[in-house]
Image (tube, rainbow, N blue to C red):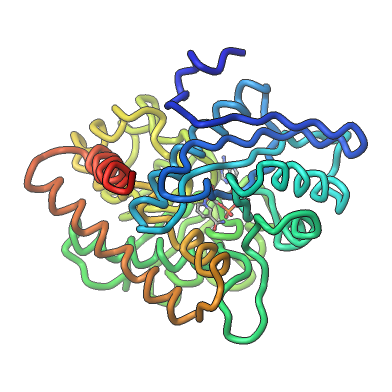
Length: 349
Ligand code: NAD
């Protein structure tokens, strides 16, 4: 398994492999950049088909965090932890304590929080071992806790910006939104969309999560195989990445793609493929920054929820600037976002 010649290797500063025999923890932490601050990004626990897949995920996700944090103007670089889920090493307080020791050993170069497959409780166990963790409930009016509701708010505001641009609509009333994945972020997003008058189509591979949404609000359930191609105005990917590709893009019917999932594009060229089909793509790491904004306010302390909200409300303006440049230049939105991120990182050096 090569690293330096890996297709997703992008001058990452460091890559760390952890093994804890007692708990069965096997994890990779990738620190992509600490130019703008400590490498911050959530921890993902997933059943990978191979170690190479886990490495690919860590490399891509950590680079995405560098770009996300730069565009969100946070004093963070980018990093990410992935835990290779294993039936023989189930989630336990001890497993996350081992992860906490791994994070501590990096001395603050990496700050962790929740991502796919991780709960606030897991992060509490990490906190027993290290101060380099965020995403934990705070007392009083202090900002903090599970970042996913803030991610959902940012995505909701981003959807509003995208429909103003692409569909000339000022409201979600009567809009049909297909939500792929109704976990932490997708579930909250469904509620916000429903409250704003949108009709929902949803899919998930996890029946429990699907049922939780259906118990709270009206939604049409479709199969995971159908959701990407649903007859909807907006597609909101809120599951995993790698879903927009040469295979899927020709069949997508939505005019707007705006969701929380990281690394939605299989390759950079897929952004151009979407633009060619006149599908407006909200670059994932721009629209889904709400969670890391909350994590940042919590980590640096003394912040109120109002301050988090005011920063999350900047997301639609950033997207609108990208959409407007895309419309003027005919360039894909993902390229413009990457260019902006690289410019901000260069200035911060
Ligand atoms: P989650 O694990 O709570 O939810 C993900 C959901 O997607 C689960 O219900 C899962 O069953 C479902 N899913 C997985 N594969 C699927 C498939 N093929 N079809 C349909 N559903 C599928 O995770 P989350 O925290 O809600 O994060 C969702 C996405 O948003 C991830 O890509 C994550 O990296 C990204 N993200 C999350 C946050 C956050 O604050 N949690 C912040 C930024 C980005």
